[in-house]
Length: 222
Image (tube, rainbow, N blue to C red; front, side, top):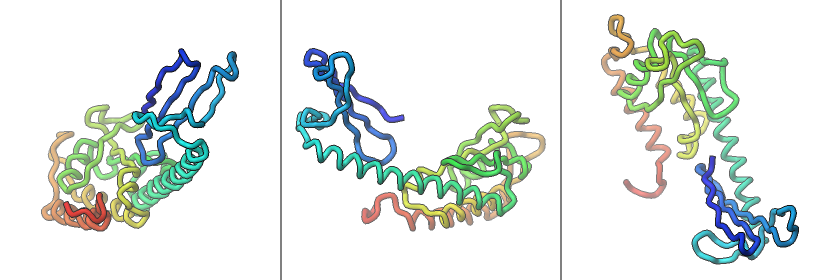
């Protein structure tokens, strides 16, 4: 959820608020005016909606136009997140991986790694060895409990923001399945594992290629 900063102006009968979204998008601004309708505050955006921290009053039409543009940008961004999550889920399913709920209709994918004979902790660690950062996550009625877990939780927003598209997410699924299929548990341990020779290096190099094709700051040499 976004953080909300509120400026009190009860002595003037006016309340103002600014919302700073955690995901990319326009800052939103509104005011509640108790002076015009004493028993019922009304929402308005006008000259008394000041730029946070500056005291600069913006034109009301500009506020509305920027808000509308921000909403359209947010809708497009949210749709890309959902589309990419679907591509990631499809990428796993066509490679015979098991997903909790059989897929996704939002930004998250929960992969059941017991089909690879692994715990979530083993899978998380093996993927990290190959340069893929994930989080282990419990699944319903998890046989390995909440610490070792049996799942890996994945989300699409970060890579979507970076510029990844559906084809890139399919490639991510391919690389992850490569790692998991080449990871074996050691004995009865729920934490120890062994990764087939060359797997970490191969997948890490492929992951680096994907990142190079979608730089974090395009045009800026890091």
